[in-house]
Length: 391
Image 1 (tube, rainbow, N blue to C red):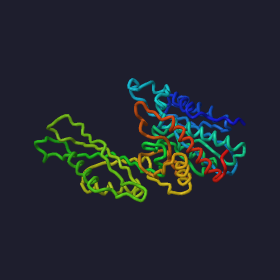
Image 2 (image 1 turned 60 degrees about the horizontal axis):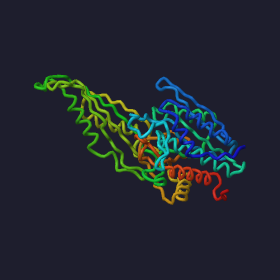
Image 3 (image 1 turned 90 degrees about the vertical axis):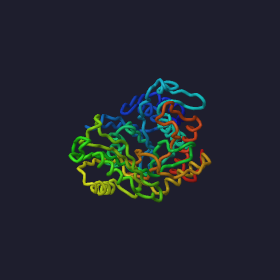
Image 4 (image 1 turned 135 degrees about the vertical axis):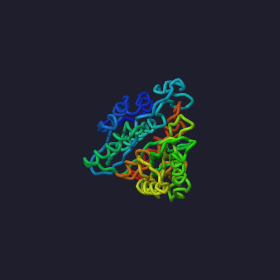
């Protein structure tokens, strides 16, 4: 089997060149298949579609067989829209190397990390000289930046039903604030979005006793929700937060008490709560107002934690060895597909710096691509052959 070594920058550039805005695949999975197949990876497309979400192409690529340990790299090739392309220094899907950086949509989030997955695996396998025992896989979705309905979750469900098992997984989300090595994510807060509608009685503002102002009731209900902190945080999490996103009445008249008022809020919650316990808490608070209200809640993911253990220790050691930085084990930020993976194996997140993700002129330093790929390679060394001499 050819001992091909993948060029990280070249592969990242090829991936960026693909206009894979969710849910479009844009050719990115084909690029990755062509890079991995010469390394002996078996590549399988896993498309899914559903009534509430369009068809999404996904890729599961695995190298090795048998009962050895199975390590998975997980990520997404889909990207957010570039916005006004005239605001970009160059075409967002024409990768450019300038000022020691690789520019283009997805460079940080997270095509750069996917290239680092592949490059690290190629170097690790080359060092094994055909003696590799175990399994390395890449679980790549095209539905992370979108509704996350037909991506990682359905891939994992299907693979589990087929008997596939994982021992550990690293997700390549951009976890580092400023420098590669600063932060490993070992959990994430949950996210609960609420749609609160309060119904009153429309009337004239000069005769409020003939009306029931839903805006006043809505304000008092929201005040109850924000008057006291939800918690003080926990061992690995910051305090939960309640943020009001919007309040809408849609009333163009200044002398009319409206019939309906609405608000949308979002709670980012730690492991002191579940979405169910928060719903009970909110309904108890809102019921105190005695209003005619409707509350719709949707949870995109519960809070979760992979307690510090073997995976975080190996990843920390790899980061420290390659970068000289002692990483923080953190649970900050939004949600990621790790919320699905945590049901199947230990999972941690480590990737690029996040300074330019989702921004105009997204970019990563070429030096950071090299560092990240070497961290991933060092992690594979520790996972499969701890203490073994390097080639």
